[in-house]
Image (cartoon, rainbow, N blue to C red):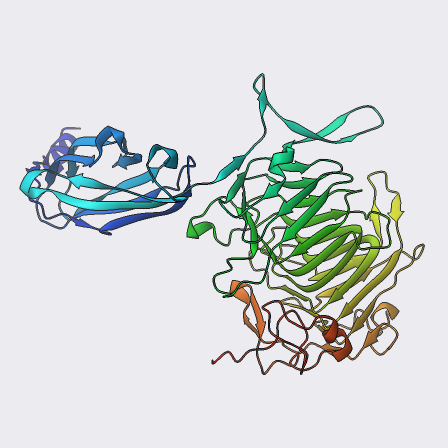
Length: 507
């Protein structure tokens, strides 16, 4: 035991800290906290502080320049606060400083909807003082959220079963003066914003809707959604496009799927017209339940993009959908799911699924006419029509098109002048009449398993090259019905398959 005590004592080192000499080094000279909405906390950002000297040092004070009034918050080497004394760093070592902020733009005099909020972290004082600047852009917004009654959040009734049990979702119905969304400020929505029966939600060009976790839009029986986006003068600026996405603006969240719920067009909702809308990072981009029973399409989609959905991009259950210049990109399961029959007409659309966040054994395009119920029964509806003309159906799976019908109900479909990935390497479907690609009644002038040459699938950029086999391969009479592509490029001379006219990538 005596030997053990002796060895322990001989290894002990007493640290003697010298005052800082103003020679600290930092991992960055400015910490940019990216854009945040007013009164919504930022992500946590880090700053590393290095002591490159051979001496153990003590920094007398580390603090925010604005002191306790600062909207920034610090954590210095495990301690939270806004001012710290005697911060120690060993020789050739470093410490972390973590920074976050919550800012209310209304606390400042500003004439716009954005405000640049700044401060600095001061290390030491006087002649030895060193600073690291802090910068964040605060974005003003209109916040919509459920009310609380006796501490209980407002909900929307979805269903009542035979035993009287209710199914509710956290949300609220928009008031009449809230039904028109303008582009003066972005909107941040908590819970589901409901469109009541007989009401119309109108979204003007240039609007940005940001949804918190488990939030979205729900349109009730008899309600209508109108999205009036327009072609932007510069496709890179997107000033007239409408965008639905999550409420985290930091770059790290730019491509995170499943940040919010869905746009849910419930059974009985009617007359939905969507133009120049982009839906990003939802769980299900758009969910359509049933159709309104009229001779007109219940949902019309034009120049619309749905990207990076955790489950399904566009999911229509017994829907009646008419679409042109539609792009449905990467999804965790299916890009477009035509479920339980319905009616579908798609012209110049691109369904491209290159999902790589997890394993995917489902196709980019799945069509069926039934659903299995919990009691083991099958509920089926007619697939009256499913027409795809001048479309691209492609992805990183061998089979990106699948049919799954029951024979008790109609199952009508047709593909004309489409590029389709269906690489049946094991001849699993060789004798299946559903995939009789030589039958001109259901398949006409299509291309199979030829790479469309998208520009950048990792970034969900599905423009096609001038060298694409889809270039000039579209049906001309159909193209004349959709004379410009999703970016406003004329396609009447030599039309291409898909939503985009081809471009020279080198240019």
